[in-house]
Image 1 (cartoon, rainbow, N blue to C red):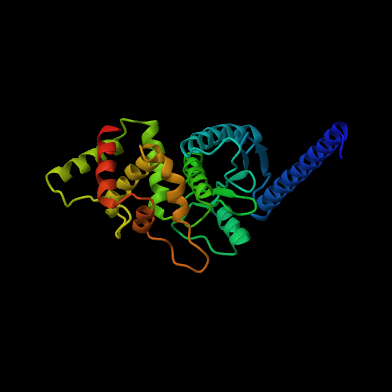
Image 2 (spheres, rainbow, N blue to C red; image 1 turned 180 degrees about the vertical axis):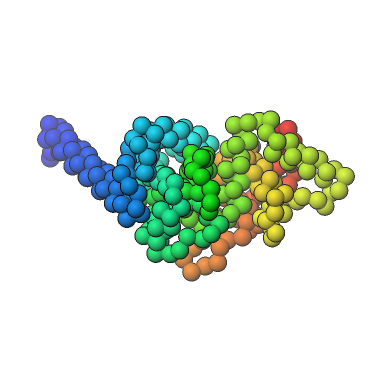
Length: 288
């Protein structure tokens, strides 16, 4: 039988071992991030740490610290919205935000990490399930790096949503919608909210217009992007928000199986489309 003193010693030793292992892993992640910056031709690359993030890029440390403070606030808002438990880590390690102001650097990043080519329409890359999860931010062709923090806020939100789901394969409307939902919550009188309410008000005179299933239907146009924001706001903040985790888990593709259909996921959670349509529109119009 182990005496209390011996047990305390064993627990203390175990704590020290785990702390050392954690410190060692953090050191490895930092070294990997700095090495990746060099591989992407980022001159004088720097890395700093916020409470929840690593922030890396080709900026002076003072500038990078300002950027880090801003994206830490974005992270805190998004993780609060997704209702992570206090002891629940969204990722396998801290999320690293790479600020790559030269598009060629993002192209090199995609080549180094994904062994792939950067798509012309992309200005960022996100992986929530990678060993060292990341959000890499750059610019569109020909643009200047004037809004990197704003784009980083968007992609941090996407990373956290994927982390909640445990998958990088969520539908685009969910990711775009969550980003828009956060913006609408931050600005209740935003033009987007006004436009959504105007659109949904039309369903009173044209009942067949704008059904909830239209959001994940084909032809993902500007109107559906607005509706996606409204529906994700309902899922994240509305009366059924307790089911968000199960919805996201239900959308996670299984090995070798086709991606789950949203209709089927909702039915499995006893959220029939007709009732969801009514509840969503009521929430969008009244906030209740």
